[in-house]
Image 1 (cartoon, rainbow, N blue to C red):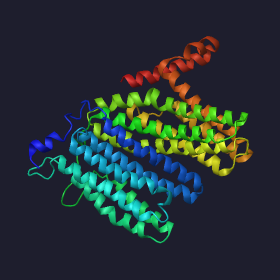
Image 2 (cartoon, helix red, strand yellow; image 1 turned 90 degrees about the vertical axis):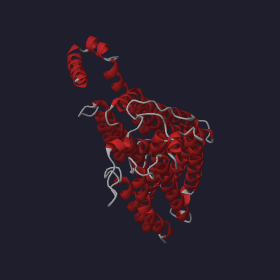
Image 3 (cartoon, rainbow, N blue to C red; image 1 turned 120 degrees about the vertical axis):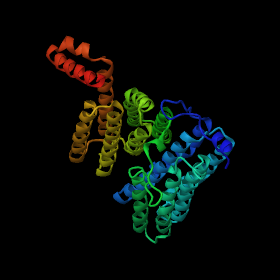
Image 4 (cartoon, one colour; image 1 turned 180 degrees about the vertical axis):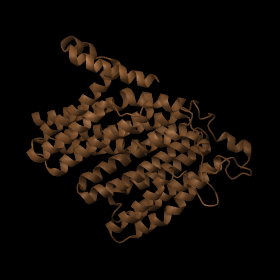
Length: 425
């Protein structure tokens, strides 16, 4: 492809503070992944066992990887160009096929899922490599070409899994393929005879990456809201179901607060002004958003279970689902915030929240309280983390504590001043 033609396909940003707005076609593209998240949560609900959890994890990692690589692609190519729009439309079709086969991916639809995934990943990467002019001579980069080679290399594993006669064998083939693919960015997509990518190859518009990931968090949280509304609408209106409905919504609202009040804004500012935005995009957004989204999906499953049986004693499956969901969300956000803050330490509010999650899980496992009671305390933990962090950054809680408990106020004031001094360095 000639130079003028390829250059028109690319975004006009330099990757270091440049602005790359999210296009309407990208928002339209995300609708397919709203469906994918719904399919994943329903798959786990119908297979609430250790085997079902592993299968759902494999499917989730494939879905996330397909979406994330498309996000990187649209950071480089201009989605408003007709050729790029057609590419995104083709990726949407492949993603829709992949999403629709999720319920039976470890049954009769395994091969269809595998073929759709390969087509999305290899086909999109191949197109972007051509659009970026990597096939011209001389070319300044072969980053997307190497990425394509990695996806082509794992394709036999996906096909072998799709043809496997048992779900266990399929999980092994697909788990191996994902393990290789997830090592790609860590290994800078090294290919013998071709070389490795460099940080300069990953120059991106940081604000675009931050906004796209924030929108995916909204998608995941929206799935929880949809489940809550749909389940509540199908149930008899009782005091218990009303309470469960309110508690589930408040939990989603608290998770939104934890991520967006500080993390999303600071993360966007950090990657926009970083000297190596591609490295931040890999670490903070590509990898550490995985547990955040996975945690939200698990919490959505717990929402539906709570609404369905609010007064029943909690059982082990529910405790593990809710506790793992809370733990994954807090671990993901605290690592994301540690990277985006530039500090070595983790947010104390999130560490305290994790301790409370462990205590709640042990209590639920041993005492078997009513599901509604357990989930109300789970929501209270998220609210506690959100309010603590809000207070530590905005100072809204220090003055009242200093008035009512001067000794405690002095300790907290010293800690807050120490944290702010470290951030200012």
